Length: 394
Ligand code: PLP
Image (cartoon, rainbow, N blue to C red; front, top):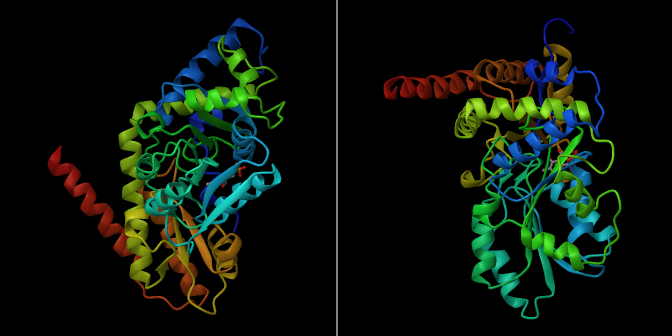
């Protein structure tokens, strides 16, 4: 079905608002010119706000995976031990990169239905009397499972163990959809990307870098060239880049940051929470199970839904795509075929979500998946209840 609009309800890339599309539609300019310098300075300053930092944030022309690799190459040395938690497929992928770089990875297991357990981190670090562990690396919002981690609690656990390891987090699917407070939480490296909460096309990878991470980058021994923070920071000081930047995406980023500022980050986060609550109400009314088993860890960004036993998530996604022109996220890694994911991030409002949930409910019916009717109504109840509260308090 090709008529009407396509509903891109995967948890990133997320739809790009017209304002940002128009901003990207710009003649290319000289990246060594004063015009570019002004743009560079502006965005390198403005990008700090969603990171909750006053420290440098670098922007690579890359996907988030590039920033994952850069975080490792710039801070660690061959043979270093790092502590990671297998919250889901994205934690698995980051740990694979760490292994390929010759690091020794201590990977704590989970059931892929919870976020990171800070007590476990504290216990493992407390045992590490010789401080062999050089970094704790965790995924902030695990996009494969829709479980988020309380990063402030992870920091607290590290402090309680009096351990000096760097704290590196993957906020690829958290940035600009839920709070990221790099400085307040004491995070040394925050890795992210443009194609999710930032409402941009894929193609930019961001990294927030603390002074401690910067100091580590001066003495570590892993090789890097393209990914070298030092070279990037040297040029960024004057608003420039060491090589040709993704100029047009940077025009888009300027617009995205302006949109986030206009709405106000607190309002952006509240909107994501509201839509996530409505989505979970729908799933529960359908009688389906949420992949995330810990209510404290429920993600405001996406909702992963478990298929009833014997029903294939990808066959279901095919039905919704063919009948209702909606893309839902697939199950990744260990939950392939067992889970589908509803993205509710970025440029999304109540009616976009209601359309998406209608598509899911009709898909369940057409696909003959066992479910109870009423999920869409349950979501509307959440949304109208919320708006009534908002009216009364206005
Ligand atoms: N980390 C998380 C949590 C993600 O959701 C993703 C992508 O979905 C990545 C890392 C990888 O980013 P990219 O696909 O931009 O390389």
